[in-house]
Length: 222
Image (tube, rainbow, N blue to C red; front, side, top):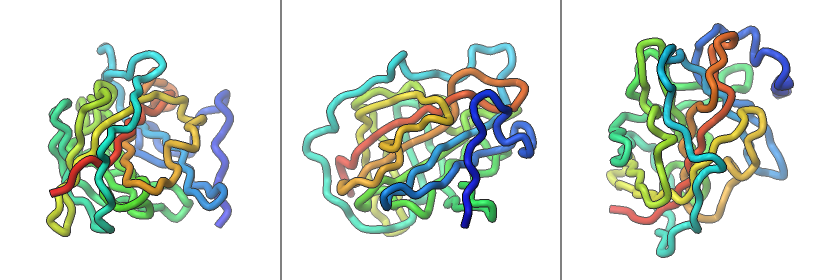
């Protein structure tokens, strides 16, 4: 399948896409590694300061010591992030016929998506959860993602009955056309990425200029 290239920054992103629609991501293959460039669009909260953003330059620490070993594949069903009051179901998302990663329905604000063609949370590799920052009605599931800091935790419940806990070690914000490969790069250890939109809202496109990315590693299983 031939995959589309993203437009240059001086052009309207995805001009054939309905303004204010959901989440799509360019899927590319590089040296055997899945690399995604994620653009999440949502309705802006006009007249407000907008969603929280990571500190300038992001925040980072070394991955926590005592990381847990992988527990195998199992579909995730629920995500909880105590520091920002996230308590939400998960739905699996894949690729649409044009080779883009689908988003959870934008009209369901408290719903996050798991990219099913990557690792499941807790398995070896990099699991990916995406969610809207807001919609036309107000904040959505990952509105507070930019507030997370190293040491915060993310709990994911899986269909096999396990609950896996990840500890955040880095948050960052990137131009949506320039996500570094390491965001989605596969790893030998169980890792998690949480992604939503961020930066300035662009009224002409119905989207945001950037992506907020949270990096976390597996530190516990029950």
